[in-house]
Length: 193
Image (spheres, rainbow, N blue to C red):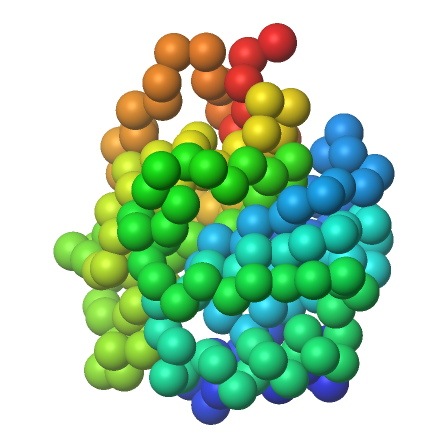
């Protein structure tokens, strides 16, 4: 993990590996044509997942292009096992608005905190990565729903207490806490069976 390139304001932590390990173990897909990584940052989630699951094409979504572009490009080039990838430099709320892109597997490490919770960092780049200051929690869930194939599933990481409230899911969708370890939770979103 120490070989991944990261900007000075962010570091890879146990959280990302926790999500990758559990998403790979719990997904019903042993391979997938399309993977989406929301809030991709330096691409660690996508790169690590391609070591565990055969992925044809990854779509990585990140709003902070200036901060992450050189690190994401270097990590994808060196560590990803992909035929192809596309980087979408936009917010999660702006991504795939028409719902044309559909993935079998989606992973996300969204912000943990509401803007009003706790003490914000003096570094705005960290705040964007850790707080819902660009898109709301509902916008993240909406992006997951519109971006999943009929048999697709999303896994995301949440840290207690997580965002307060409960996003609205369309009829026919369900989410469940599939792993809980200490303050970390992995949540799965999929269509109801």
